[in-house]
Amino acid sequence: MIFTDRHREDFGEGFGAEEDTYSINDNKYWPALADVMSAGALIILLFMLFSYIQALDFASAQSQIYGQLEEALSLEFRILEELERVIAQEIGEENVSLNRKDLSLNVQGEIFFDRNSYKIKPEAKPVLDKLAQAFTVILANEEYRSRISAILIEGHCDETGTADINWQLSVDRAVEVVKFLHHTSPELGTEFPRYFGAAGYSKFRPPELASKRAEHDRDTTISESDSRVARRIEIRIIPRYEGVKEQIDRILGMRVGRSLRR
Image 1 (cartoon, rainbow, N blue to C red):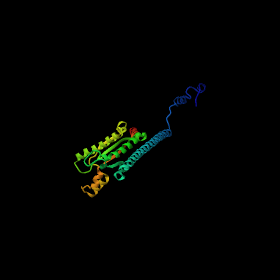
Image 2 (spheres, rainbow, N blue to C red; image 1 turned 180 degrees about the vertical axis):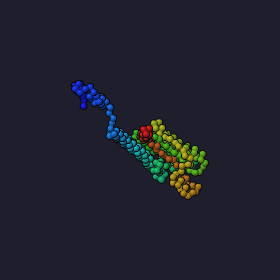
Image 3 (spheres, rainbow, N blue to C red; image 1 turned 135 degrees about the horizontal axis):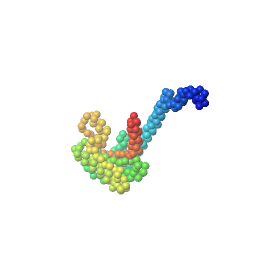
Image 4 (spheres, helix red, strand yellow; image 1 turned 120 degrees about the vertical axis):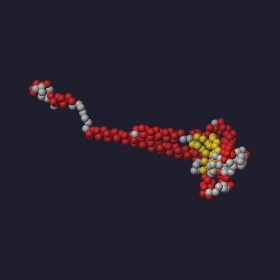
């Protein structure tokens, strides 16, 4: 109740003083417990909504990573299948095989080289000519080229000879193949040389089948058939994973942000 000056005249100055004091201080508001709980619940709800949105974003990023990995591996497999077909037409299916486990193409080394030599045999040149043509077509395709980081030519030896000799021999054979490809198809050497690499593994990466058989038999004697398989050239396509890396960096950034907020 608010008292006017007329009321004071009628009832005296002291009357209503307490009410005036209350009226002056009635703007000092203290929130009720229910209001505090409502505000807290709203904050929790907003936090949960934000976390849910982040979780959806995280799941979406993961899905994109899996999709890009699957696409890269699928492309890698298609290219190796095409190379297998091209080589098999020239040297026979028994001399070339696609390792589907680690996605590499194995070619019998004796098709290309004599024993203990890195010089390419004359009869091997038509095979490498076809291989160079296949690589030229593949790298001229923008879709393929944009997905390829490198084409690695690997040289492998068998257990005979010292490791040092086999190191040098395996490297020299891989280098000779790359050089021949670039010479046969000048386009590979002038426009696409950065896609090619050469590596040698000496005798330290035997074929999986021969390696498992040696472990099972516990026999240091290597059969001639195993040695022949071990003396090989492998072709490996290294996919480009820039899109995957961006998504991984994004996920890592999200996780770091969450840790800092904690």
